[in-house]
Each structure stands twice: as structure tokens, then as C-alpha cells.
Image 1: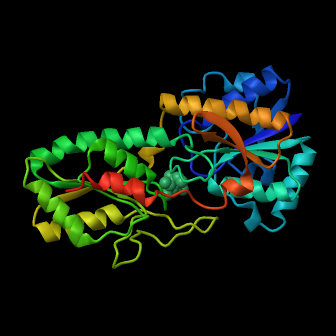
Image 2 (image 1 turned 90 degrees about the vertical axis):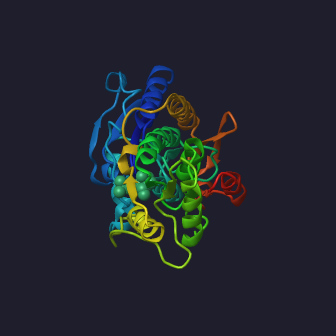
Length: 341
Ligand code: F6P
């Protein structure tokens, strides 16, 4: 078989580890051929490819980003997009695709499968918000980066008796905020799933100032104040109709400073959470996903996504995995609340 591989959406640590595992097992064990499609769904749409053999995947296991490039291209927003993809696959002799991505990239994969394209999905995203899998790769690395940043911010905040508000990514799911905030001993953690009351946040901050510790507030970029809409810096939408999030941290630091009379600073971790080398956990998870994805393709399990359940890798329908976002359940947030204030 000749199999096309693509990586779509926001990049994340571990993408190269998946590509490597797919090619090493696919070529080495099964004798399949591979072609890389550049920049997510733009590659199949524009017919832009790159060679992808064992030579190309040597040495990429620890490298962040993706050797294939990525984009947020949505072929369903392009006139005749599906037909163009089918024609480009046929012209290049590509029998099937392995799509590595989050809800958007895999949502496209699910729809393409319905229109007859042979595709297998691999779940990636630092946000950990994909359904049907316990974890996506990239998440563990992002949480570790955020936790290390919080550890460092504790000491400088304490030296200057300041509040530090740390804004983390995660879009409309609070997983990164929850895990990094818990691991980093945050004063309060604010998630998109539970709109927050500013007075309560200020009370937690004041409480922390009674000790020698300074308040560290971890806020997810999608967190919402109860009496106000989403705080963002731009109205821009991407090709999937998602708003570009970010800005809540700076707004919140300003409000806390006004209400406490004590200096507050915002630190936006941004794309630092997505860059660089994957953690050991993500390297192993991404590698296992890659191995199981090529097994699925070899067995013609089209329309399926590989997923982690406990310690096992299983197959689930793409349509099921992309049906709804996996958000933080209230009981998980309640565990963290014990440490607020
Ligand atoms: O989905 C991953 C993610 O990093 C989100 O956490 C964030 O909201 C978004 O991508 C940022 O995307 P971009 O890099 O396109 O601005």
C-alpha cells in the first residue's frame, strides 16, 4: 500500500515520534510505502508532498514540531475540496491516509471517511480535549512546561510580594490549567468549565497574602468571569470558526491589582507550551499510537482512531471521538479547590 501521512492543527511535541513509528513499522515490518503531505489538509488539497521513508525519519524522535509542517486548513470550506483531495490522492497513487491531529483535523478525517477516503486517525493536542482517549500526546509535555514555569514564578512573586497570574493554553478545556496548577501549588485555578466570580478570586489572593507566600493564579485562556463574556484580544476566527483566545490573564492581573492595591503581573506562557522536545511519557505514547495506527491501516480499519484506555491502545470510530469535547468534570475541579486560598 502507498500511505500518505499528514499532521494538522496546532503542532505539539510528539508529532515526529508518531511519524517515525508509522514509517519504521509500516516500511520495515509491512513493506508499505509512504508519502508526506505538507501542512495538514493543505497538502492533500494542493497536492503538495514530500518524500517520507526510513531515511527521512531518522533522528526525529526527540524533535518538537513536525517535519511535515502543519496548518489549520479546512477542505470543507474550500469549493470542491473533497474532490480535489480524492483526485490528488489518485494522481499520486496514494491508497490511504494517516491523519495526526486534534478535533478539527480528525473531524475532517471522519467526514472524508464518510465520503469514501481510506483514513486512520491519531489523536494529538496539548489541550487533551479529544473524546474517547484518556490522553492525547503533547499534553504531558505542556503540563510539565507550565509546572516548571509556575515553580519559578513562586520564588520571584514571593520576593516582590506580588500576585502572578499565569495564563495557560487549552482552548475551551481546562486540563492544562488544572494539572499544572495542581502540580505547581497554585493559589487558585480558573477553568473554562466553571465561570469564576472575581470577588472570590480576590478573596483567595488576599488570604494568601496573609502568609509569606505570594498568590499564583493559574487561568486557562478560555476561562470566563461569571458576569462578563470571554476576554480576548482579537475577534479573528480560524478556518474552523474558532476564536483566537488569550488576554484573560492580563485583564485578571489588572483587576486583582485594582482590588487588592498590591502589584499583580500576568505571564502568558503561550506557544512555549507547544514547542521543544516531548517528555518521555509523550514520546512513548506517540510512538505507541504510531505503531497501532499503522497496524490499523494495514488491517484496513478505515474510519478508526487509535486511543489510550488505561494502559492499552484501542481503536475507536473517528466519528465517535470527534463528537464532543472532553472537558474537566466538576469532581476533578473539586479536588483542586481544596487547595485554593
Ligand atoms: O489547540 C492547541 C492550541 O495551542 C490551543 O491551546 C490554543 O488556543 C491554540 O492552539 C492556539 O492556536 P494558534 O497557534 O493557531 O494561535
